[in-house]
Image (cartoon, rainbow, N blue to C red):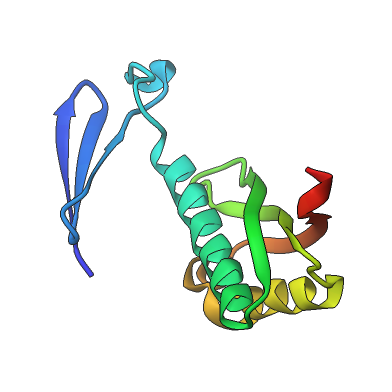
Length: 141
């Protein structure tokens, strides 16, 4: 895996991923940025959410469960001093589907957290990560 990050102007940066995609980042105005794009740490948190949601959907689909939506809401706390690493992350999943059993979704969340999600397992080295979830029947939405 590779990525190239180029300084654009002010405190804006553009990353070009190994798969050829571009991602913009910017700093807060008090740090010289113009607030035109997400902060790098926001992207780290978003990437973690994407990684774990990907796992959960894949696990459920491979098990032939009828999942129609998966959302993860992440809330993170950071250290007060440099390096301002994540110290706590809460992930709340809302998984919607047809006749999804709670224990099946719980197993998928656990497998992602403990075995498959490289991003959250890596962040777990500095942060306490908690998980909660709810299952919504497709007809209830």
